Length: 509
Image (cartoon, rainbow, N blue to C red; front, top):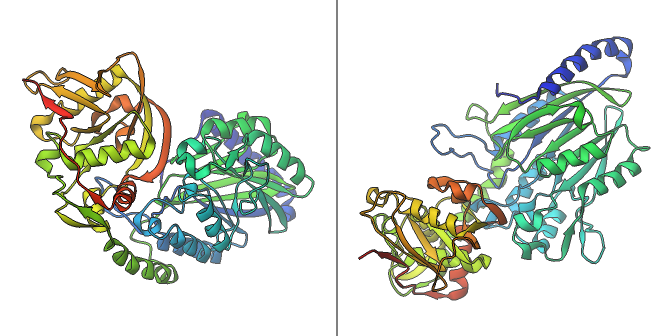
């Protein structure tokens, strides 16, 4: 059983609620209704099982989730299945088919509703509209509208469902920060309204019509809590976006039961609530681990098999041509400037418009020979599901970052930086942390007090490879675009690539 996270207030309230519910059920047994809410979030295209970093056993897989969902539906009368967003983008299996496989399996799962997540916009608004049309379930977005003021019809604000004689309103909300956490061009025609205001308006409409209100959210913690503080009457919040497992109920936030099921389909969340006269009198929650012990649902496997087979054909696609060998050899990308390192870093900067770009050499895993370049070669070079992030860093922090990058060069550590928009000189004979001698940005000495925008990958942005200064930096843009997808798109557009060594990284003489 996975640990549940409760605040002290939530624990005390839960004890009082459960004790009090026994009396309510005894007095009004005939009117008590149990609703089972199954929930997932932040699948990020991981439809197939996967083995997490440093783990031995695989986890997840939508076919295994389907087996559990079907089993629970056979056992319980009143089941609602909800998806809290960031579903249709994130892995090769969904990205190369623009989210179609994700929608196909969610249709088979008979999802009651999904809220649109910020990364569900990653293919652009037209593709999202097409996927919403294919979906046999509503994709909600109460606080999304066109800048012209018109509603986004394929993202309805809410739905009403009937379960166990109860009328239940489900409202979908996505973070206002969506233009920062997908590429801005993907949502340039849209605006994301204050979730508090929109929830207030919809609750006023729904209140006379429903017995219970559920929020299905893809919000930040502060946004979600602001809604709950300002809008009374919310019974349950099924959330995503934070990638955490939690179960919280507290008086401070209107007694709403708040649940979230981690990330990537590692668990299925199950919430059972008992409702008497529109009041949740008790609840029970558990996280059901998705492990190899669970059989895969054959119907889901049948849907995915053609996509998997077609994936092989897609990867064989020739996207461009290399006029020279693109050097991604381990011993080189972890110790010196290489032309492939330059190309990847240049693409990071070109894709985002950042002042500079830093890519860890350890994220580049192979070379590409002269001649045709296939998608499979690009995915071999960049095998990790790293997406592009832009941070704000001072010149001093950039200096620290590059010092970290060259601090273990003699051990061929993956933190060695391949760069764009800057050049630097280092002395490997100096002590670690004191090796950077000079940094030039746009040909001028770096200003240690100035703030620069830095494009990088999400691994480094999270503090990976010792880049702890990145973890504390302000995120300017979190595109959701996989780095390898950006590289493939760049080469496809360029047709022929011939990056050179330019003296971006020099040894002190």
